[in-house]
Length: 208
Image 1 (cartoon, rainbow, N blue to C red):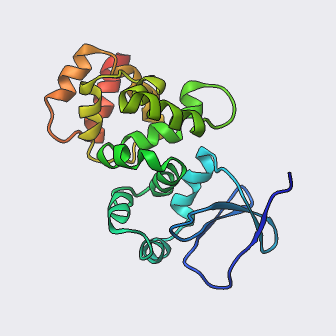
Image 2 (image 1 turned 90 degrees about the horizontal axis):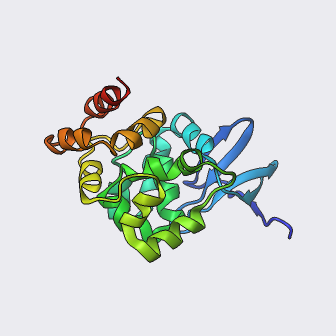
């Protein structure tokens, strides 16, 4: 099947950036299509990988984001506004699996785990269709289990209280392992808002 080529408009609030020599583009709400340039001025739909989404943190300026968010519903803009480095990842997650929007709005720290699912679970290719199916069948606790996190209310409560949902990629696997430890759960459950420093200390204590 031939890829559909989409010409870029001369002037638009679309988001654009470059990753590994290729230009990427996200069209304005409500379409929000993720596209890669296949020829000068010609675009095709594509699924961005984790590194592509991460590169948007430097490639898309705050001014471009402000312009893009003018076209986004207020609740979606508020959700995306909670992210800095991972804002493009958050946009991709809620548009790739819109049925997750409510869960991710309540637990934005899950975005980082979802975007990194291929590395966390192993295997090749993305599994967004499987993510949607797991959520439809088993809800958020099934999603936690699929990601290798403890499927418990304590885990969900801790993730909901994470102060900064822009969780560093290097912290995800250690944090996932730490959340299986009762001592870590007990320690983080006593916190109010959970900071990056508290999460890092919990991971360090487990490694020690």
